[in-house]
Each structure stands twice: as C-alpha cells, then as structure tokens.
Length: 140
Length: 448
Image (cartoon, rainbow over the protein chains, first blue to last red):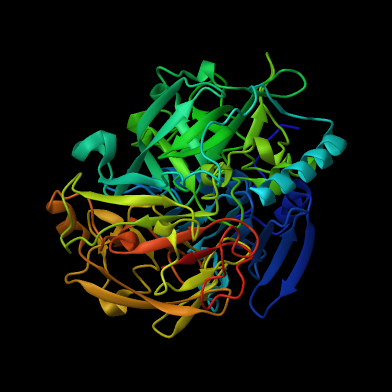
C-alpha cells in the first residue's frame, strides 16, 4: 500500500501529454478532456472528489497543472523535476509564518498551494511553455 | 454535543463493517466533575496575549496569539497547565509539544490503538511544508472553566518513527521540518478552533479505506519492524476542536475579542484579549445585534468577496478568518499594483507600500448577507523597525494572480473587533434563537 516513498520519474509538468495517463492510473481517476482553441485540458477526478487539471499546449507539453481536494496531491508526481524549484526558491521566512499556503514565483516556475484541513487547492505552471496566445490566468 | 455524538456512532459502526478496524481509547471513563447546564454557568473566558511568543523578539513571529491549556491524565486530577499555546482558528484540534508535557507526561495519557495494539499516529502538513508528527493520545482538556473529557489530542514529537513520506505531499522546504520543538513551532502547541462546518481535522475522508492511498493522508499506525501505514480512524478518535467536546452548553463556537491598536503597532505583551466559549449560550457571548452573520460554504469558507469591482469566489479564491496567520494575506502585489502595493525588497511576499493604503472589500455569506470589511496595509519594513509585536496593518501576497489568490485574514483583522466563529454543523446549533438576518448556516458561520 505504501509505495509512495519511491516515486518514479512520472513527471507531468513540462512533460508530454502521455504522462497524463500515468497520473490517471496513479490517482485512480476518471479522465475528461476539454479542447480549447490554443490548448486542451485533461481533468482527472478521483472518488473522494480530488480534481487535477493538466493543461496541454499544441506541442503536446503539459504547461500547467491545478489541483483541489481534501488532501494535498503528491507534488513530486505532478511537478516532476520542477519540484526542485520549490525547495530552492524560497528564502527562509522571518517575522511571519505561512501555515495556510506557499507561493513560489520565479521566472520559469510559478507555484501556489493553499488551504486548510480538509481543503487544499493550488496550481503550478511554466511560463515559457505557455502557448504565446494564451494567458497564464487560464491555469486555474 | 448531540450532533457530534450522533455522527460518531453512525460512522463508527459503518467503519467496523468496512474495514474490521476499531480503535479503542484505553482511557478510563469520562468521570467529568465539571459543570452541567443545570448548575451555574462555566467560566467561559480564557485570556489571550499577543506578541512574539516563547521565542521572543529574536526568534519569534509577530502577531502570535496565545492562551493556556490544561492537560489532564484522563479521569484524574493529575493536570498540567501549558502556556504559550497558539490559538489557531485556521485548523482543528489540540496539538501539544511532547517537551511541554513534564508533570503530566505523554505516557500518562490514554492511548488509541488498533486491534494489533499499535498506537495511532498523526502527521499534519501545513502550508509552509512544515508538519507535526506524533501520536494521538487521550486527555481531559480544560480551557478556563470548560472541560472536554477524553479528548483525542496530538502530542507532537512523542515517537521515534520516521514520518511517512505519503503524508508529506509537498516536499519539505529547506529549513523546515517537524514542528516538534519550541524553536520550530514558536509555541508550546496549537489550539485549533477552526470552523469548517464540523469540528474534526479529517472527518469522513479518514473513515473510508478508499482514501488510504491518498497523498497528504494524516493517520497512520507503525507496527514493530515495519514502515508506518495509513489507517482509517473513526471520527471520535480524530483530532477534534476541543470546544465541540465541552461538557457545558458553550460548545458551538467561540468569540474572539481583541482591542484596537495603533497603526504603528503595540509592544510585545501589551495586547491582551478574550477567548470566550459558546455563542448565544451565556450573557457574555450573545451575538451582538450589530454583527453581520456570514454563513460559510461547504468548504468552510466565506463564499465570495468583491474588491475593486471584481468578484472573487470560493473555492477558487477561498477565505478564512485565521488567528493562526500573522498577516493579512490579501490578493497579490501584481493585482494591487495600481493602488500602490509593492513587495518588500528584503522580504518578498510581504507588502511595503510607500504610504499606508486603505482597503474596502465586500464579503458575501451563503445566507445572502453582505457587508464591508475595511482595513489598511502599511509598509512592513516600517512596522518591523518599530520592534513592536502586534500590528493591524501587516499584509502580504496570498498567491500570484486572481487565478490562485486566497483571502487569509490573519490576526491583523481581529484587532478592534469581536469575531464570532460558529463551527458546528446544523442550523445555529446550540443557540437560543437564530441570529438576526440569518436564515441558515449549514456549515457554521463567521459574524463580526
């Protein structure tokens, strides 16, 4: 049951669309695909109501992901190699603590995770992978 | 109490059938000696102090809010009062550092074990990726004159097991880890008094075996010689808002009152307030006729805010009134650039406008009420240079854009206000009458 300690490189963010199906198996979720003019979205929904959306560019790359559910999703699985950007991007906090959320904003990686017990949501995207005619605001 | 007990029984029986696992608190009976509703009303007011907390100016955070909690070995008069416990309306359940329990050590508390005799453990990861990891034990808990008997609490740090990687959904940032010391937590514990519709930290998400593989899952058992594995937990053994477990009628919520403070803040330890238990249950906690009731939505959030003509709605832009946060985490510097908000050069994530910026936002409850919230944000560097410890105008980013921003109204929001936080499910549970202007509050409410 507890195999999450050794997460393989199933990276999603920044990877090709085919990695979505690995996520789908991992999350044991239904996959619904919505196509827009300049990108498409896979929406994975698990039995307990966790929703993961993966935003795909015309080149077939995942440029953004969002999540919402009672627990935080496995960020190593969703963010792949970009997870290292998390750990290195944030300077130590002084004066305040952020028990409810974490925001990381760099030129090539944007990440926000926030919530409270029984409710977490967030998003991450790679600005350089967003199609030129698409706003980052679509990743929500 | 009746609602909570009813749900407990149903879930417990259901779980026993589904998983075959039943947790039994090994504590003795709940020989409560505290007041009942037929005797004189309980002292329902605990003192609050605001400041840097036990780490002081050098290592503490500003706008910490603390109270004292008395922890007793269940069914005994063997009690210890723990001071400097962080009052957190943004979480649920009581969590105490193992190191803060000295005369009533964790070993004197009741255990919660599965059919193999393995002790229940909990791991809670917070937004900043730090976490609390330790056993769920049973204590009688006293706050002012109120008593919660046989309450499951987390004792942070009282185990030697490696924290399950399954729990740590977001890799822990460098410099963060288990909040199992005063130095790491900045407090001796966390008193979680959040609303969120019901007073449990996990609820039905931890009673079904279908959720056991979820990342971020909180409850585990650690059999000898094996890695810890996720386990289902009946609701009566989950971390519970102590107020909901009070034997008195003051168990439907809390009232937080703090005085007004100057724009440049107040010195450490000079601001005190009251944490009053119950809403509409005693003469000191009647809902003020001037208060607006904002019923919460199914996520435990205020359904909508409007600022500058833009509507921000839950759950995309969720919200909480949160004594456990030190600042007003309000929108983001890009969105607020047009009114003069910029981030501090030396502290990204906090706001350093060149002059004080006033804000007015409109909040809308699930009961169709609405009202305005006014606050100001001042330059954080200016505030910190005063060496004061309490500020009503310290702000910072929540997210990076309206697509991911949230509204975490931290302690600055509470100064100069009386804030009612009703956390019980049902419609105005425990109150003698429905608040004026409110028609329903299925998931609890905020009023101020």
